[in-house]
Length: 183
Image (cartoon, rainbow, N blue to C red):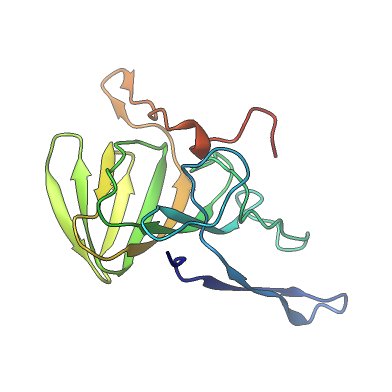
């Protein structure tokens, strides 16, 4: 079985004179977020994640060195960080209904995928389509025969309120969550 294509990440910064530099230029291999323990490269037919970048805060600190979060088990979204992630959805994998306390910008880079809401309503998203996901329970379902690649930017948000009730995030499988105290 082959591996999903890598993602090239170029990160810029500054040298000690304040001049712009290329701080990093690397190929990132998607990992399988469903396997517990140390992230392993995703194989054909598996879901793949690439955590391209996570800010150190909001606003971010562009003076301090950045921390590479790729190949680390991190929560899907954090309350004080913006996350840029690539997700590969293999064909035929069951979708996972979930809600995060965030605003997610999702862009279909290639392929076609179903976005299903918890009420059963489905929209088919195609290459270059963009979704603004505002804290709803949803699932991504790849009914096609090819892997679909999407880019997501996740921004923390306040929980959705309906009347006096706050809508909580949903539990995710353990591999998606970092262990308590783990960095």
